[in-house]
Amino acid sequence: MPYLIVRLQPVDALAHRAYPYGIMQEEQLKKYKIELERERGLLLVEIKNDEKPSDFGSDIDHFDEKTDQTEELSNHLAASRDLKNRLDEIDVALSKIYSGKYGVCEKCGGRIEDEVLNIAPESRFCKTCKL
Image (cartoon, rainbow, N blue to C red; front, top):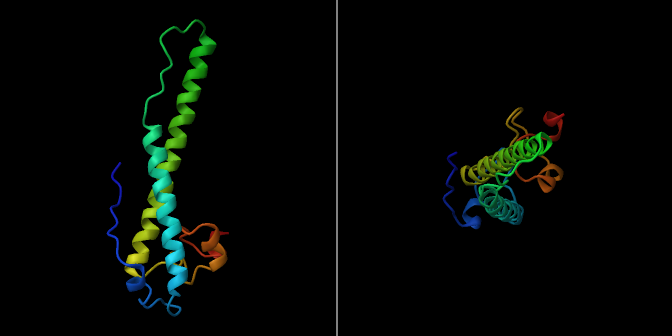
């Protein structure tokens, strides 16, 4: 799965872009950018570790053991898919920081509340549209 490569720019240069609801404060934008980049780094490490195949061995004695291994592999694949989806969401949020669209709800075009961004800085929707 291809990943978005984000070109890094100085945060202070980004903070002066006009947002639909005024200018986002430099420290706010920097805080969200740092948190997103930190989370992105952690996810990349976790995804890399998850890509190592599990060794179940070849000495399956019982049908129950094979079922357990199949279930474990299925759970592992689902968790890996969730990590990659979260990474994609973070990449989209970082690209929005660089394009001046960060903090704008994709559904209604309104401002995403700080309360929402503080909990999940990759949020794409305001509190009202999430419901």
